[in-house]
Length: 482
Ligand code: BG6
Image 1 (tube, rainbow, N blue to C red):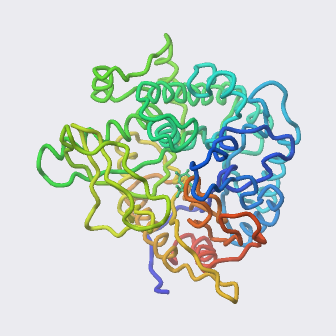
Image 2: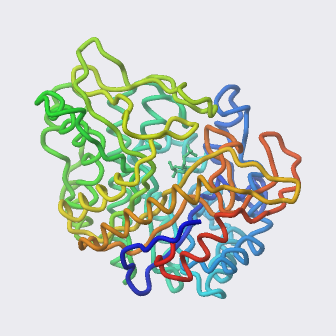
Image 3: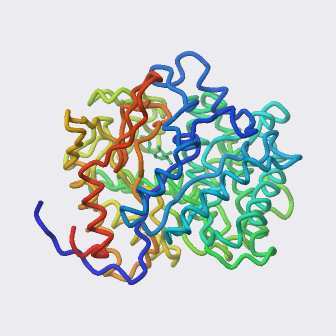
């Protein structure tokens, strides 16, 4: 492998990797855990690839010591993982489940034993089903207090050991797939008014959590993780430049501006008011959002791909094209908002088997944009390549394509740092292979191969891929040898 010199990464840079509870833990009915929206959703026929579930997932619930020992062997500086709300509060609120608390306490202690900084995501999409049954979960403002109560419990129990907190993972994705495309729970289709309302509740839950953390004396780092897909205008035709501006307002700034400034972008808000989709806000909400924006200390970025923006005629494509969940290249359809923008493929970029464009420069753009627009430090909370990996008879996995992907992205990140962007951490997605929500187990992301396929019954044994050794050396040399 060719050795390349990257731009300098700062001392103490947090080289990491990430996961989410539902995608790795399994043990769905163990340890007093309550049922979640995902436990329910995956049982609806046709919702996930080959009916895959996270019932067993990669059995991290029983194998967390083995997994964290592998992280230590690799030299990981931080491990980002999420806590399942239903393990802490099986009913979403009420009595704390001490067995659930103990499970995460063990994970945190195991990380600290190896000097791995735990980075906790409070919410990575698995919601106690009891709250859906009680008031439709995120659709009701009642969730705000329950979320803050849950988060405060985490701060009380783990706040002495955890210094990095991510309130919400990809609010833009779980709400889009939940209320627009019907691909995530609660499986609602094209409910635009509710989509923006749900988002407003999520913003309030995030903001009140941030404020509660500070009121409780929390001095650590806190922010949200956003699925950032930066955009390029198709060309210099003014109508396409405006399509990009509209896309950015509606698809990126709608979230990041609220986290960082505590207000919605004006042009998008005006447009949504005209459409009748703008969220209803309670008195005092705006002030809370603004206050919380002053307390976040980073913008979390999950970066996978960039997109192209072109004007979309009034009878053009809709947001509801087929998504590629099978890994059959070319099966994704073009999407957009009629009369506003559409996202054609970028002819200058290669794509993954799931039709995601591969664009290291996009990561650089993200960092530059956040630095210029918000002046905030950045945590890259996810970046990685989903691919079909093959284990040889000698139990080796030669994933040079993943090494290539990560190498180019880390180089781009190094450039951003050189230019003055303050990047605190880089977490790859993911450490072990895991369940890809809609794409099953065949879309692998890890440094560690897990022996299982779509159906249950694999050994679940762990095998280090070539990328494991490569990233180990990246960490050892603080990004000098890529
Ligand atoms: C992010 C999520 O959207 O991307 C992860 O935070 C997810 O949970 C990852 O797994 C990759 O997406 P996918 O659809 O390929 O699993």
